[in-house]
Amino acid sequence: MTSFIAHTSLDCAHAFTLSEWWKQVLDYVDLPDDPNEPSHPECMIQSRDGAHQVLFIEVPDAKTVKNRLHFDLRPATGTRDEEVARLIALGATQLDDLRDHYGPGVGWVVLADPEGNEFCVLRSVAERDAADA
Image (cartoon, rainbow, N blue to C red; front, side, top):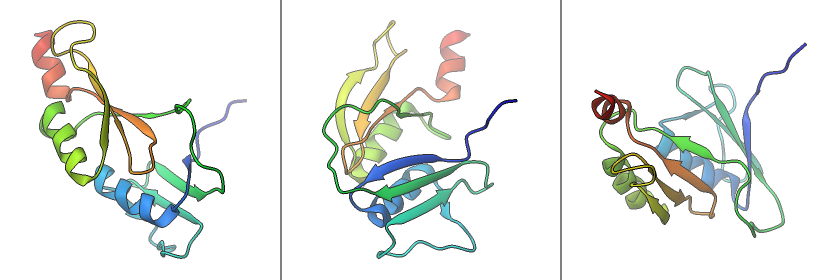
């Protein structure tokens, strides 16, 4: 017997606001039969094909330490650097620049969402394939 991940949950202070931000980052949408509202203490978003869901849950305690679990994002189009610039323009904060970790152009950039949850931006598939060629 095994299990599968039903969805990824993020504790937060403002479920609706953070879910709206991540919808822009991931190009996700509300569940068709359960749209999110500003007053909802829990807000679920999903990929457009419904294959992955993220649930934002309001909790009373503030984030105080580094995430033990985080997203590694790979740009669907464009480059890692273009995606980092786009996410910073949306309100992400850069925490660390590890673009040259393991060699020039190989690494990633560590960002935080508006509530301080860390995530990484990797090279795009095209960048990775070009470097491997």
